[in-house]
Amino acid sequence: MNDIDWESIKKSNQRLSINERATRSKYVYRWSYTNLRDHNFYRQNIARCPLCNMEGEDQHHVQCCRDKGASEMQEEL
Image (cartoon, rainbow, N blue to C red; front, side, top):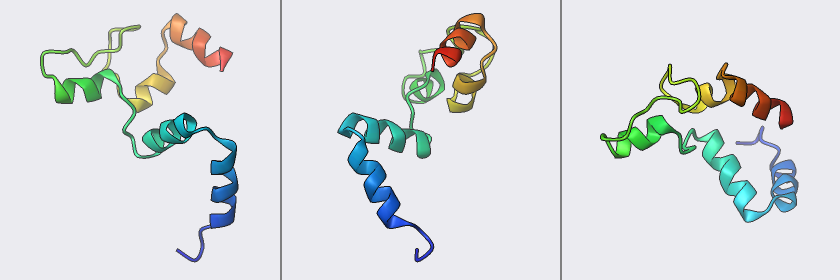
């Protein structure tokens, strides 16, 4: 715990809104709401990516999806 730069984390948090901090925390802890996560809660829902329909849509897939629509959105960001 002594190796963590808590002051930098505090400054970073101060620049983010409450929603941005929540989004970052969900990303870090892999709690982002993807179709795979939704499927874990509601078995009747499918876990496939809505864009490419090929893989289970987890947090990694959201960043790496090869669908044209996903690529365009990733470039925008």
